[in-house]
Image 1 (cartoon, helix red, strand yellow):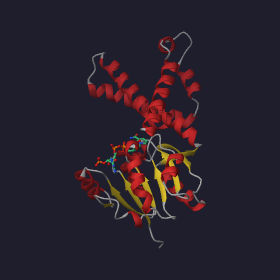
Image 2 (cartoon, helix red, strand yellow; image 1 turned 90 degrees about the vertical axis):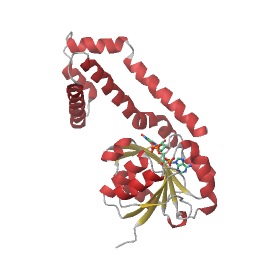
Image 3 (cartoon, helix red, strand yellow; image 1 turned 135 degrees about the vertical axis):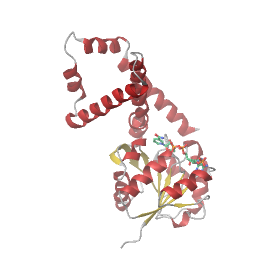
Image 4 (cartoon, helix red, strand yellow; image 1 turned 30 degrees about the horizontal axis):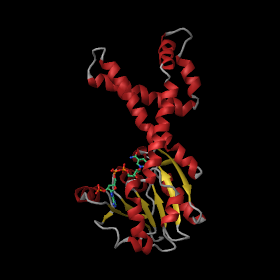
Length: 269
Ligand SMILES: NC(=O)c1ccc[n+]([C@@H]2O[C@H](COP(=O)([O-])OP(=O)(O)OC[C@H]3O[C@@H](n4cnc5c(N)ncnc54)[C@H](OP(=O)(O)O)[C@@H]3O)[C@@H](O)[C@H]2O)c1
């Protein structure tokens, strides 16, 4: 059997766990080491829950890693990249999942020739249904690209884009799940106002959303599905008209723009 690929995670938060749990479920031939900053209790808990090695300081294990996944906040990337710079070896592949940190920034912070990639997954990686977007730096080999496909394939579906497109579309794939969950919260609140219990409101709304997602998955045409529910002059049409009167589409566009603006700021901070 081939020697397992050694993957080091710097940062062991929600996104790191979603990614490495997906890899483990997919039975990739990998050895996983995780590290974080301060929270030793979380590291200990993860080490018991999953077959991963935990280290409180990643520096000593760094030379043994084939792939380094930066799953720490964008704000600490400068510091972590500075630490990595003198140690990095030419075969090592650095992947960040941080909002706003593209290959241009990674390549500028690391020695010339370092292979880097930017992966933007979402938290559905936890159930292997992340819609991830990604882009490669200029020094990534064909073998590293194939390896990358295995990693992203373990957490869901992925689409390769340009660096600018990943900046622009992170709001749609990375942040919009939060918009959707907020929509669910708003519907639950509305359902509660009709005198049902919290459990009933949750069941009604969640199962409606799960059913609608399954319909989207099967038919792939949201406009057609919307029209099927909407008889002209009927009750659903009245509800949709209220959304339109209140600039629903425009508000979503504004939320996307605000998300992108903040992500860009975070990448520069
Ligand atoms: N959550 C999402 O939906 C999502 C989607 C796409 C991308 N991302 C990206 O994923 C990254 C992690 O997000 P998250 O949601 O997993 O956050 P999180 O749960 O808060 O985890 C952050 C992790 O980074 C560690 N960390 C902080 N400072 C560090 C340092 N100086 N060196 C090493 N590790 C450090 C933290 O360790 P301690 O807890 O010990 O401080 C923690 O393990 C972010 O860059 C974010 O932009 C998140």
